[in-house]
Image (cartoon, rainbow over all chains, first blue to last red; front, side):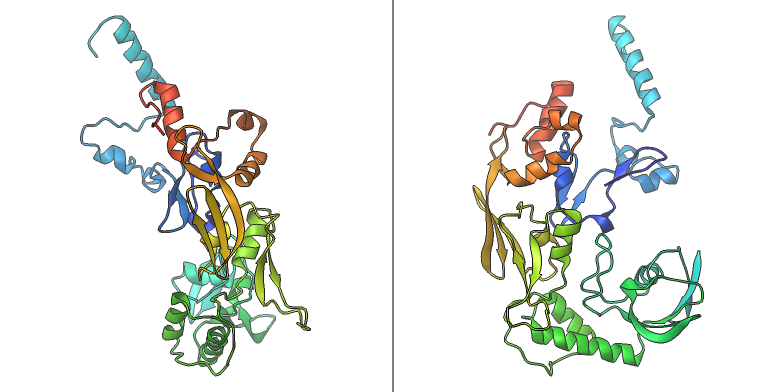
Length: 93
Length: 261
């Protein structure tokens, strides 16, 4: 399990995973998943290979309802502020 | 960057890389049984041997997992002599273990049909040492060791043994074993680590505080918690991964109530 310095994405290098499951027991969010077929841990890496090519994660690209968005933390908090403001002002979103 | 030649093909490798890693990166396959990137070179199976030549090197046959790349190194991975030596290695392996699928595939690939050596050993353990090394170097427990019998004058490893008082029951050895000599069996309340067909250590499985499903051993939890920082220790909860997701998603959004046990 490693963290990329440039954007903070946490990912599993499968060639280095020995399958001890320590990360599964330690993670308070229950995020790392056990892959029985490979005997290694899986974790969402935000499709970092796609991100590096300037693309969005596969789930965001293919979400039929456009419910998922790929935005920065600053954009997310801006979005939330606007949503709450509209809710308080009873303005339709 | 280092430039070396493998089977006549020029290959660029980063400094510090081994010949095995450089070959694999260049799409050249070298067989191994005891190598795992996570554990580094060990050099016991001898299947990864290659012919090596180059500046300052006497032409030799060396294990590629343990040989660092350097400029001008010339490697041959599949010459007649390498092929013959690998065949002998496989014959020795066939004679010293019970046949398993991974070994059968290797024997077929190298055209080994019979072994000229005889043995009385009945287990499939190839003494690759992955279990011993992962337990010592990654888990930090050293519950597994190579052992030989008392009349073994040459101190050659004959088998693997588990110290059940030290074992924490994580099961990484079973996960990593390439021939399933070590197995992990979970029942309703108990975990068994099985080595050479008999139970080598037993653990009571602890249950998830939310759903009651048995998920891991107490000693393993203690080992993981001991590696957490103080804040993480305070927040640690005995939950299975499924319940951990529900618990924290629910505490953030109120929309994911716990699964009933």
